[in-house]
Length: 439
Image (cartoon, rainbow, N blue to C red; front, top):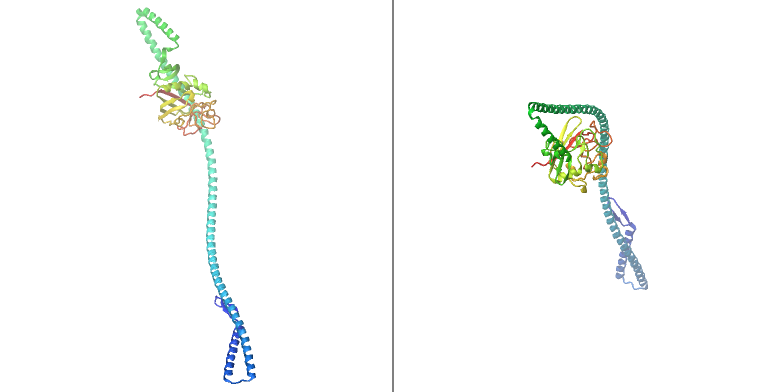
Protein backbone atom coordinates (compact mmCIF):
# COMPACT_ATOMS: atom_id res chain seq x y z
CA UNK A 1 0.00 0.00 0.00
CA UNK A 2 1.13 3.56 -0.66
CA UNK A 3 0.18 7.06 0.66
CA UNK A 4 -0.23 9.64 -2.08
CA UNK A 5 -0.91 13.40 -1.59
CA UNK A 6 -2.16 15.02 -4.78
CA UNK A 7 -4.28 17.90 -3.35
CA UNK A 8 -2.63 18.63 -0.01
CA UNK A 9 -4.51 15.72 1.67
CA UNK A 10 -3.26 12.17 2.38
CA UNK A 11 -4.99 9.29 0.51
CA UNK A 12 -4.58 5.42 0.74
CA UNK A 13 -3.78 3.32 -2.38
CA UNK A 14 -4.19 -0.56 -2.22
CA UNK A 15 -1.45 -2.50 -4.14
CA UNK A 16 -2.33 -4.18 -7.50
CA UNK A 17 -1.22 -7.74 -6.40
CA UNK A 18 -3.83 -7.82 -3.58
CA UNK A 19 -6.56 -7.03 -6.07
CA UNK A 20 -5.38 -9.70 -8.49
CA UNK A 21 -5.33 -12.33 -5.70
CA UNK A 22 -8.91 -11.53 -4.75
CA UNK A 23 -10.03 -11.80 -8.41
CA UNK A 24 -8.30 -15.21 -8.77
CA UNK A 25 -10.03 -16.51 -5.66
CA UNK A 26 -13.38 -15.39 -7.02
CA UNK A 27 -12.71 -16.98 -10.41
CA UNK A 28 -11.70 -20.30 -8.79
CA UNK A 29 -14.86 -20.32 -6.68
CA UNK A 30 -16.89 -19.67 -9.80
CA UNK A 31 -15.29 -22.69 -11.57
CA UNK A 32 -15.99 -24.81 -8.52
CA UNK A 33 -19.65 -23.94 -8.65
CA UNK A 34 -19.80 -24.80 -12.32
CA UNK A 35 -18.14 -28.16 -11.66
CA UNK A 36 -20.68 -29.00 -8.98
CA UNK A 37 -23.46 -28.15 -11.37
CA UNK A 38 -21.94 -30.29 -14.05
CA UNK A 39 -21.56 -33.15 -11.58
CA UNK A 40 -25.20 -32.92 -10.57
CA UNK A 41 -26.30 -33.01 -14.17
CA UNK A 42 -24.19 -36.01 -15.14
CA UNK A 43 -24.93 -39.43 -13.88
CA UNK A 44 -21.39 -40.63 -13.73
CA UNK A 45 -21.06 -43.41 -11.12
CA UNK A 46 -17.74 -44.79 -11.89
CA UNK A 47 -14.69 -44.93 -9.65
CA UNK A 48 -13.14 -42.26 -11.76
CA UNK A 49 -15.87 -39.87 -10.80
CA UNK A 50 -15.37 -40.60 -7.13
CA UNK A 51 -11.70 -39.96 -7.41
CA UNK A 52 -12.48 -36.82 -9.22
CA UNK A 53 -14.80 -35.68 -6.42
CA UNK A 54 -12.17 -36.41 -3.77
CA UNK A 55 -9.67 -34.31 -5.66
CA UNK A 56 -12.20 -31.55 -6.05
CA UNK A 57 -12.96 -31.71 -2.33
CA UNK A 58 -9.26 -31.43 -1.49
CA UNK A 59 -8.93 -28.59 -3.94
CA UNK A 60 -11.86 -26.83 -2.26
CA UNK A 61 -10.24 -27.31 1.13
CA UNK A 62 -6.99 -25.82 -0.14
CA UNK A 63 -8.93 -22.94 -1.67
CA UNK A 64 -10.80 -22.41 1.62
CA UNK A 65 -7.52 -22.29 3.51
CA UNK A 66 -6.18 -19.78 0.99
CA UNK A 67 -9.38 -17.71 1.29
CA UNK A 68 -9.09 -17.73 5.09
CA UNK A 69 -5.48 -16.64 4.83
CA UNK A 70 -6.41 -13.84 2.42
CA UNK A 71 -9.31 -12.83 4.69
CA UNK A 72 -6.93 -12.55 7.70
CA UNK A 73 -4.47 -10.57 5.60
CA UNK A 74 -7.25 -8.25 4.46
CA UNK A 75 -8.41 -7.80 8.10
CA UNK A 76 -4.82 -6.98 9.16
CA UNK A 77 -4.54 -4.48 6.33
CA UNK A 78 -7.89 -2.90 7.30
CA UNK A 79 -6.59 -2.41 10.84
CA UNK A 80 -3.43 -0.88 9.37
CA UNK A 81 -5.57 1.44 7.26
CA UNK A 82 -7.52 2.56 10.38
CA UNK A 83 -4.24 3.21 12.20
CA UNK A 84 -2.97 5.20 9.20
CA UNK A 85 -6.17 7.28 9.14
CA UNK A 86 -5.67 8.06 12.88
CA UNK A 87 -2.07 9.07 12.17
CA UNK A 88 -3.21 11.28 9.30
CA UNK A 89 -5.78 12.99 11.59
CA UNK A 90 -3.13 13.46 14.29
CA UNK A 91 -0.76 14.87 11.68
CA UNK A 92 -3.41 17.38 10.53
CA UNK A 93 -3.91 18.52 14.16
CA UNK A 94 -0.15 18.85 14.56
CA UNK A 95 0.04 20.91 11.39
CA UNK A 96 -2.74 23.20 12.70
CA UNK A 97 -0.87 23.60 16.04
CA UNK A 98 2.35 24.38 14.19
CA UNK A 99 0.52 26.97 12.10
CA UNK A 100 -0.90 28.60 15.29
CA UNK A 101 2.54 28.60 16.95
CA UNK A 102 4.08 30.12 13.81
CA UNK A 103 1.44 32.89 13.91
CA UNK A 104 2.17 33.53 17.60
CA UNK A 105 5.91 33.71 16.85
CA UNK A 106 5.22 36.23 14.05
CA UNK A 107 3.11 38.38 16.43
CA UNK A 108 5.73 38.25 19.22
CA UNK A 109 8.47 39.09 16.72
CA UNK A 110 6.44 42.07 15.50
CA UNK A 111 5.91 43.33 19.08
CA UNK A 112 9.62 42.91 19.84
CA UNK A 113 10.51 44.91 16.75
CA UNK A 114 8.13 47.68 17.81
CA UNK A 115 9.60 47.67 21.34
CA UNK A 116 13.16 47.78 19.97
CA UNK A 117 12.19 50.73 17.78
CA UNK A 118 10.75 52.58 20.81
CA UNK A 119 13.91 51.84 22.85
CA UNK A 120 16.06 53.13 20.02
CA UNK A 121 13.95 56.31 19.78
CA UNK A 122 14.17 56.89 23.57
CA UNK A 123 17.93 56.25 23.58
CA UNK A 124 18.23 58.84 20.81
CA UNK A 125 16.14 61.33 22.85
CA UNK A 126 18.22 60.71 26.00
CA UNK A 127 21.45 61.26 24.05
CA UNK A 128 20.04 64.52 22.71
CA UNK A 129 18.99 65.66 26.22
CA UNK A 130 22.40 64.75 27.66
CA UNK A 131 24.03 66.82 24.96
CA UNK A 132 21.75 69.79 25.78
CA UNK A 133 22.54 69.40 29.52
CA UNK A 134 26.26 69.42 28.78
CA UNK A 135 25.84 72.59 26.71
CA UNK A 136 23.83 74.24 29.52
CA UNK A 137 26.43 73.21 32.12
CA UNK A 138 29.16 74.73 29.99
CA UNK A 139 27.12 77.91 29.65
CA UNK A 140 26.50 78.02 33.43
CA UNK A 141 30.20 77.55 34.05
CA UNK A 142 31.02 80.52 31.85
CA UNK A 143 28.31 82.61 33.54
CA UNK A 144 29.63 81.60 37.01
CA UNK A 145 33.12 82.71 36.07
CA UNK A 146 31.79 86.03 34.81
CA UNK A 147 29.67 86.45 37.97
CA UNK A 148 32.65 85.68 40.20
CA UNK A 149 34.73 88.32 38.43
CA UNK A 150 31.90 90.83 38.76
CA UNK A 151 31.43 89.99 42.47
CA UNK A 152 35.12 90.55 43.03
CA UNK A 153 34.88 93.99 41.49
CA UNK A 154 31.75 94.78 43.52
CA UNK A 155 33.44 93.68 46.76
CA UNK A 156 36.34 95.98 46.00
CA UNK A 157 33.96 98.88 45.36
CA UNK A 158 31.96 98.14 48.52
CA UNK A 159 35.12 98.03 50.61
CA UNK A 160 36.09 101.47 49.33
CA UNK A 161 32.59 102.80 50.02
CA UNK A 162 32.53 101.25 53.51
CA UNK A 163 35.88 102.79 54.40
CA UNK A 164 34.68 106.22 53.30
CA UNK A 165 31.35 105.80 55.13
CA UNK A 166 33.11 104.71 58.31
CA UNK A 167 35.30 107.80 58.17
CA UNK A 168 32.21 109.96 57.58
CA UNK A 169 30.40 108.37 60.55
CA UNK A 170 33.40 109.05 62.80
CA UNK A 171 33.47 112.67 61.66
CA UNK A 172 29.72 113.06 62.23
CA UNK A 173 30.01 111.46 65.64
CA UNK A 174 32.79 113.85 66.69
CA UNK A 175 30.84 116.83 65.35
CA UNK A 176 27.76 115.80 67.36
CA UNK A 177 29.89 115.26 70.47
CA UNK A 178 31.49 118.70 70.08
CA UNK A 179 28.08 120.24 69.57
CA UNK A 180 26.70 118.58 72.71
CA UNK A 181 29.69 119.77 74.72
CA UNK A 182 29.31 123.31 73.37
CA UNK A 183 25.64 123.33 74.32
CA UNK A 184 26.50 122.07 77.80
CA UNK A 185 29.20 124.71 78.26
CA UNK A 186 26.84 127.43 77.07
CA UNK A 187 24.20 126.25 79.49
CA UNK A 188 26.66 126.17 82.36
CA UNK A 189 27.92 129.61 81.42
CA UNK A 190 24.37 131.00 81.40
CA UNK A 191 23.72 129.46 84.81
CA UNK A 192 26.96 130.95 86.12
CA UNK A 193 26.07 134.39 84.79
CA UNK A 194 22.62 134.21 86.37
CA UNK A 195 24.07 133.18 89.71
CA UNK A 196 26.72 135.85 89.47
CA UNK A 197 24.21 138.63 88.82
CA UNK A 198 21.94 137.34 91.55
CA UNK A 199 24.82 137.26 94.02
CA UNK A 200 25.99 140.70 92.98
CA UNK A 201 22.53 142.19 93.43
CA UNK A 202 22.07 140.59 96.85
CA UNK A 203 25.18 141.57 98.79
CA UNK A 204 23.13 141.86 101.91
CA UNK A 205 22.31 138.15 101.75
CA UNK A 206 25.90 136.92 101.28
CA UNK A 207 26.27 135.80 104.87
CA UNK A 208 23.10 133.73 104.74
CA UNK A 209 24.04 132.25 101.39
CA UNK A 210 27.47 131.23 102.66
CA UNK A 211 25.89 129.55 105.63
CA UNK A 212 23.41 127.70 103.39
CA UNK A 213 26.21 126.63 101.07
CA UNK A 214 28.11 125.15 103.97
CA UNK A 215 25.05 123.19 105.05
CA UNK A 216 24.48 121.94 101.48
CA UNK A 217 28.12 120.95 101.17
CA UNK A 218 27.98 118.99 104.40
CA UNK A 219 24.79 117.20 103.30
CA UNK A 220 26.31 116.45 99.91
CA UNK A 221 29.37 114.91 101.57
CA UNK A 222 27.22 112.71 103.82
CA UNK A 223 25.16 111.58 100.85
CA UNK A 224 28.24 110.61 98.88
CA UNK A 225 29.41 108.56 101.82
CA UNK A 226 26.23 106.45 101.55
CA UNK A 227 27.53 104.67 98.40
CA UNK A 228 26.09 107.08 95.90
CA UNK A 229 22.45 106.46 96.84
CA UNK A 230 21.64 110.01 95.81
CA UNK A 231 20.86 108.76 92.24
CA UNK A 232 19.29 105.40 93.13
CA UNK A 233 16.11 104.65 91.11
CA UNK A 234 13.75 101.72 90.56
CA UNK A 235 13.29 102.15 86.80
CA UNK A 236 14.67 104.12 83.87
CA UNK A 237 11.07 105.17 83.14
CA UNK A 238 11.57 108.16 85.48
CA UNK A 239 15.26 108.82 84.78
CA UNK A 240 17.11 111.27 82.58
CA UNK A 241 19.94 110.19 80.34
CA UNK A 242 22.92 108.89 82.32
CA UNK A 243 24.19 106.10 84.56
CA UNK A 244 22.07 105.31 87.64
CA UNK A 245 21.97 102.91 90.55
CA UNK A 246 19.07 100.52 89.88
CA UNK A 247 17.37 98.93 92.90
CA UNK A 248 14.66 96.34 92.29
CA UNK A 249 12.94 93.95 94.69
CA UNK A 250 15.07 90.84 95.34
CA UNK A 251 17.88 92.32 93.20
CA UNK A 252 21.09 93.82 94.55
CA UNK A 253 21.66 97.41 93.47
CA UNK A 254 23.64 97.73 90.24
CA UNK A 255 24.66 100.46 87.83
CA UNK A 256 23.08 100.73 84.39
CA UNK A 257 22.75 103.45 81.75
CA UNK A 258 19.35 104.99 80.96
CA UNK A 259 18.73 106.68 77.60
CA UNK A 260 16.42 109.40 78.98
CA UNK A 261 13.36 107.98 77.22
CA UNK A 262 12.48 105.20 79.65
CA UNK A 263 14.82 102.49 78.32
CA UNK A 264 17.62 100.72 80.22
CA UNK A 265 20.54 99.90 77.93
CA UNK A 266 21.73 96.31 78.48
CA UNK A 267 24.25 95.96 75.63
CA UNK A 268 26.13 98.30 73.29
CA UNK A 269 28.55 97.86 70.34
CA UNK A 270 30.08 100.99 68.80
CA UNK A 271 33.82 100.75 68.17
CA UNK A 272 35.28 97.34 69.01
CA UNK A 273 37.08 98.66 72.10
CA UNK A 274 35.82 95.75 74.26
CA UNK A 275 36.46 92.07 73.55
CA UNK A 276 33.14 90.15 73.55
CA UNK A 277 34.76 86.74 73.15
CA UNK A 278 34.25 85.98 76.87
CA UNK A 279 33.67 82.92 79.02
CA UNK A 280 30.49 81.90 80.83
CA UNK A 281 31.31 83.75 84.07
CA UNK A 282 31.89 87.06 82.28
CA UNK A 283 28.56 86.85 80.47
CA UNK A 284 26.84 85.89 83.72
CA UNK A 285 28.22 88.88 85.70
CA UNK A 286 28.56 91.39 82.87
CA UNK A 287 31.60 93.23 81.49
CA UNK A 288 32.79 96.33 79.64
CA UNK A 289 32.44 100.09 80.06
CA UNK A 290 28.93 101.46 80.75
CA UNK A 291 29.77 104.65 78.84
CA UNK A 292 31.05 102.68 75.85
CA UNK A 293 30.82 99.02 74.90
CA UNK A 294 29.44 96.59 77.50
CA UNK A 295 27.11 93.68 78.34
CA UNK A 296 25.02 94.13 81.50
CA UNK A 297 25.05 90.45 82.56
CA UNK A 298 22.72 87.44 82.23
CA UNK A 299 22.02 87.12 85.96
CA UNK A 300 20.78 90.72 86.15
CA UNK A 301 18.64 90.23 83.04
CA UNK A 302 17.12 87.10 84.56
CA UNK A 303 16.25 88.83 87.84
CA UNK A 304 14.89 91.94 86.09
CA UNK A 305 12.74 90.16 83.48
CA UNK A 306 11.29 87.57 85.86
CA UNK A 307 9.85 90.31 88.13
CA UNK A 308 7.47 91.62 85.45
CA UNK A 309 6.94 91.70 81.69
CA UNK A 310 9.55 93.72 79.78
CA UNK A 311 9.83 95.03 76.23
CA UNK A 312 13.06 94.66 74.23
CA UNK A 313 14.23 97.27 71.71
CA UNK A 314 17.20 96.54 69.45
CA UNK A 315 18.77 99.40 67.46
CA UNK A 316 21.13 98.46 64.62
CA UNK A 317 23.48 100.30 62.28
CA UNK A 318 25.68 99.53 59.28
CA UNK A 319 28.95 101.06 58.18
CA UNK A 320 27.12 102.95 55.40
CA UNK A 321 25.18 104.94 58.03
CA UNK A 322 21.85 103.13 57.56
CA UNK A 323 19.96 102.24 60.74
CA UNK A 324 17.09 99.98 61.70
CA UNK A 325 15.30 98.53 64.73
CA UNK A 326 13.32 95.55 66.03
CA UNK A 327 10.81 95.73 68.91
CA UNK A 328 9.67 92.75 71.03
CA UNK A 329 6.69 92.84 73.42
CA UNK A 330 7.71 90.15 75.91
CA UNK A 331 11.38 89.48 76.72
CA UNK A 332 12.31 87.06 79.51
CA UNK A 333 15.52 85.19 80.44
CA UNK A 334 15.53 81.96 82.50
CA UNK A 335 17.81 81.11 85.42
CA UNK A 336 21.42 79.93 85.39
CA UNK A 337 20.27 76.45 86.44
CA UNK A 338 18.54 76.28 83.04
CA UNK A 339 21.55 77.95 81.30
CA UNK A 340 19.77 81.32 80.92
CA UNK A 341 17.35 80.23 78.14
CA UNK A 342 15.46 82.73 76.00
CA UNK A 343 12.13 81.80 77.60
CA UNK A 344 9.96 84.44 75.97
CA UNK A 345 10.43 86.65 72.93
CA UNK A 346 7.39 88.00 71.04
CA UNK A 347 8.13 90.06 67.92
CA UNK A 348 6.10 93.26 67.54
CA UNK A 349 7.49 95.40 64.72
CA UNK A 350 10.58 96.95 63.15
CA UNK A 351 12.15 97.36 59.71
CA UNK A 352 15.09 95.17 60.79
CA UNK A 353 12.79 92.14 60.83
CA UNK A 354 12.78 89.29 63.33
CA UNK A 355 15.97 87.26 63.84
CA UNK A 356 15.34 86.24 67.46
CA UNK A 357 12.05 84.30 67.72
CA UNK A 358 13.68 81.39 65.87
CA UNK A 359 15.98 81.07 68.91
CA UNK A 360 13.15 80.95 71.47
CA UNK A 361 13.79 78.50 74.34
CA UNK A 362 17.45 78.09 73.31
CA UNK A 363 20.06 78.12 76.08
CA UNK A 364 22.82 80.70 76.15
CA UNK A 365 26.18 79.49 74.78
CA UNK A 366 29.78 80.66 75.25
CA UNK A 367 33.00 79.23 73.85
CA UNK A 368 33.54 77.29 77.12
CA UNK A 369 29.89 76.15 77.46
CA UNK A 370 28.37 74.92 74.19
CA UNK A 371 24.56 74.64 74.55
CA UNK A 372 23.44 74.82 70.90
CA UNK A 373 21.90 71.80 69.12
CA UNK A 374 24.56 71.61 66.41
CA UNK A 375 27.70 69.49 66.34
CA UNK A 376 29.58 72.79 65.92
CA UNK A 377 30.33 75.31 68.69
CA UNK A 378 28.72 78.43 67.23
CA UNK A 379 29.75 80.59 70.19
CA UNK A 380 33.37 79.83 69.33
CA UNK A 381 32.81 80.25 65.57
CA UNK A 382 31.08 83.62 66.01
CA UNK A 383 33.46 84.94 68.66
CA UNK A 384 30.81 85.86 71.26
CA UNK A 385 28.10 84.43 73.51
CA UNK A 386 24.48 84.16 72.25
CA UNK A 387 21.34 82.00 72.20
CA UNK A 388 22.58 79.86 69.30
CA UNK A 389 20.50 77.02 67.83
CA UNK A 390 21.84 75.40 64.66
CA UNK A 391 23.18 78.41 62.80
CA UNK A 392 23.64 82.17 62.93
CA UNK A 393 20.23 83.80 62.43
CA UNK A 394 21.57 86.51 64.73
CA UNK A 395 24.67 87.14 66.81
CA UNK A 396 24.95 90.65 68.27
CA UNK A 397 27.99 89.76 70.42
CA UNK A 398 30.17 88.64 67.50
CA UNK A 399 33.54 90.05 66.43
CA UNK A 400 33.49 93.81 65.71
CA UNK A 401 34.70 94.51 62.16
CA UNK A 402 35.34 98.22 61.58
CA UNK A 403 34.82 98.21 57.80
CA UNK A 404 31.60 96.18 58.21
CA UNK A 405 32.73 93.43 55.83
CA UNK A 406 33.58 89.93 56.98
CA UNK A 407 36.29 88.17 54.93
CA UNK A 408 37.80 85.39 57.03
CA UNK A 409 38.07 84.11 60.60
CA UNK A 410 35.31 84.34 63.19
CA UNK A 411 31.97 85.82 62.14
CA UNK A 412 30.98 89.41 62.73
CA UNK A 413 27.88 91.05 64.22
CA UNK A 414 24.84 89.49 62.52
CA UNK A 415 21.11 90.23 62.23
CA UNK A 416 20.19 88.03 59.27
CA UNK A 417 16.67 89.30 58.53
CA UNK A 418 17.97 92.85 57.97
CA UNK A 419 20.90 92.10 55.63
CA UNK A 420 19.16 89.13 53.89
CA UNK A 421 21.38 86.59 55.64
CA UNK A 422 24.44 87.85 53.79
CA UNK A 423 27.07 86.79 56.31
CA UNK A 424 29.71 88.95 54.62
CA UNK A 425 27.88 91.91 56.22
CA UNK A 426 28.89 92.81 59.78
CA UNK A 427 27.01 95.52 61.71
CA UNK A 428 28.95 98.39 63.26
CA UNK A 429 26.38 99.66 65.78
CA UNK A 430 24.12 97.80 68.26
CA UNK A 431 22.12 98.86 71.31
CA UNK A 432 19.88 96.45 73.20
CA UNK A 433 17.44 98.13 75.62
CA UNK A 434 14.63 96.97 77.91
CA UNK A 435 11.84 98.63 79.85
CA UNK A 436 8.79 97.47 81.81
CA UNK A 437 5.87 96.80 79.47
CA UNK A 438 3.49 99.79 79.30
CA UNK A 439 -0.14 98.56 79.53
